[in-house]
Length: 135
Image 1 (cartoon, rainbow, N blue to C red):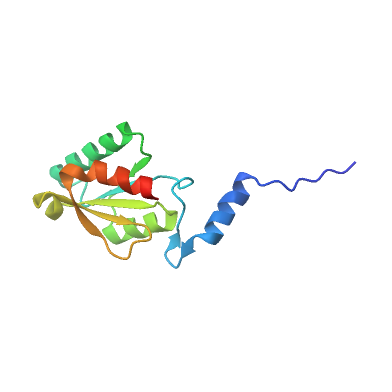
Image 2 (image 1 turned 90 degrees about the vertical axis):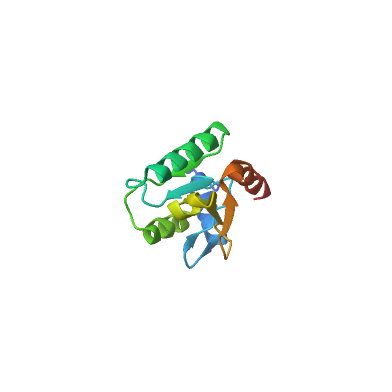
């Protein structure tokens, strides 16, 4: 007796998504199958109480809103964290830094965006919800 299966399984769907959506920096997952929708990248999380408080508050707000979010609280250089988030294919990135907080803003960049943009801290939750609906 022989059996064959030509169905589309999870591994084939992920492989096809990676084949269709990638660039030289890594994977560009559609939001529906990305491991996380948003990544929060705090600069000097272990050293700055203000950055830690803002990142934790944003994480809590997004989690309560039902958004799948990753808080990258590792003690790594910014370039390493940015590169790894691009490699993983997380569609949206928010950078929390002391300079931005002093100005009342956070840095946002979509995975396919060429440039980042500064978003007011007070409206970041609503801004991210709009970005997620658009993608």
